[in-house]
Length: 250
Image (tube, rainbow, N blue to C red; front, side):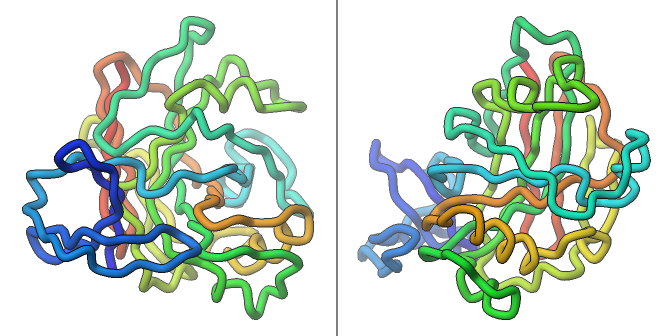
């Protein structure tokens, strides 16, 4: 099922995509969903980011080739940082260039959306706690990111976490093609089978650190090929089985 979060007639709601229609739903992650008795055309709704996480847990250097392109050692445990909720940006929304930065870059990522409260998970059970998967862009002010040290400033400007366009709830995350396209030209290309730490391993590790709540997201890392954008550029993240997340840099 493709699960979207939309605004129609001034109301925010979740919806199930069926062809060119949206079946409006009652409910939210962690509570379940049921039809609200209304179906509309896709064109009638504005797509929002498909969830509203209390926290976004992001994994750095989780593709071997990405660590190598930055000249960094392969990590022995997940490299974790957090993006605040204010970085959330809807599909098709504009990424705003922050005044403090001179170099803004894209990072295509598979994003895990948590479906129910999770703590101290075993890797073997971890996927049972997943609502689904979406596309993400870990936008980064690269000139503000130190090679060693805290990445928070570079990763946390408002709108630096586009997600969408929807959550795919029926997907095996172990071997999906992932790409980014800058103005139509492919810049990144890999498969999630190349992750150093798999989705179940990440869920187990993170849930032993903190409680994962419904709607929280885990950005699983980006492959090699990251690079700068210019104002007016269009950046698209495409993941097999999910779809295409498109944003422009304003």
